[in-house]
Image (cartoon, rainbow, N blue to C red; front, side, top):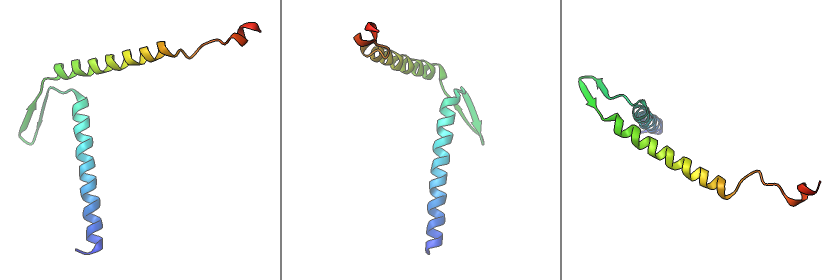
Length: 83
């Protein structure tokens, strides 16, 4: 293989991997319960995935709320109270 072919195949494989990963991410986010493509039918339980996603979001929000309670951003200093 010469250098031009190596560059082409490296670019092609990298592009295809990126495309496959992007399509996989979009299929997960779509929350479709049934997908059929070229005679292949995929059915999945999206209710469980939605509940899992909601739990993760709620956990992240509670962590953010705890951080805000520990360090409030709008504190007044004693110097401002004297003015």
